[in-house]
Amino acid sequence: MLVPMAPRLDTLEGKTVYLVDTGFSGGGLLLQQMQLWFNKNMPSVTVVFRKKAGPYMDDDKPLWNEIKQKGNAAIMAIGH
Image (cartoon, rainbow, N blue to C red):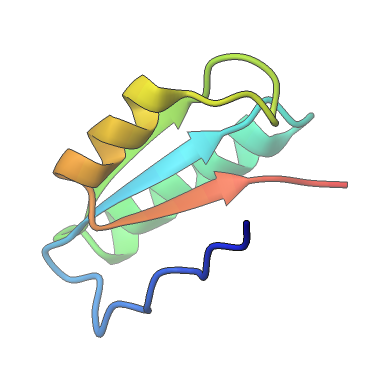
């Protein structure tokens, strides 16, 4: 089943963005650098770094529920 991406937000100001490390080599480091950038350049954005449980393709329902309840956007580090 295909699920479309969520619509883009008009702004990130005052929003909460989750940075999700899926375990891909170097992905967590990239996201931590992004978190530093947000803290310096967009301090009104709340950035939450989380490591997804299990391998990339495994579900992490507690994390997805947290993001749905508390977040406005999510960025996942997925690489190939």
